[in-house]
Amino acid sequence: MLATKWLVPLSLVVVTWVGMTAASAADPMNDSAKALRDTPLGRLITGDIGRLMTLRSDANVTDEQRQKVRAVLTSHKAEIGNVAKDLVAKRRALREATRSETRDEAAIRKAGEDLGRSIGNAAVLGSKVRGELKPVFTDKQIELFKKFVGDHDASVDRWLSDAF
Image (cartoon, rainbow, N blue to C red):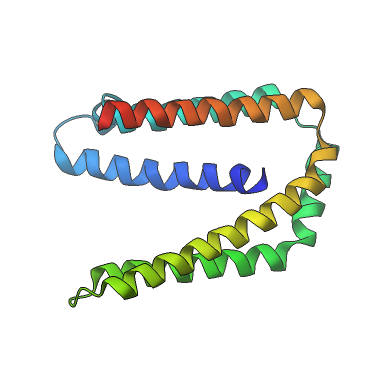
């Protein structure tokens, strides 16, 4: 849950920035927000932003819950930082392997496997932290979080269907 809770918003920010940059570069004379909104990627991004805003409002997280979440995350700050740094390093290594002038399939596969291992490590940590966070939230809030993830997955499926 924690991995989803943090990775999804971060991914949305990155995808939004890339999408807006691409939309404005493609046709600088158009309103980039309108141009982006009228694409499958734009609908994915704007839909997720809307769902996040709705989730934030509907979940109604209390100040006490925020403090408990902050305490749990702070207690794992070093672990989270180490996992994040490892993910970034492994992702960059994969990028460099794929961009190499000499195409080395073995090096690309090794870098991909290393990244996969790092993603697995992040998922294990996320599961551990999620277990500590679950008691902080009510059953209704947990259902809202699950619904958000399901709606996001459905949105990605629609985007894949529309775009490809």
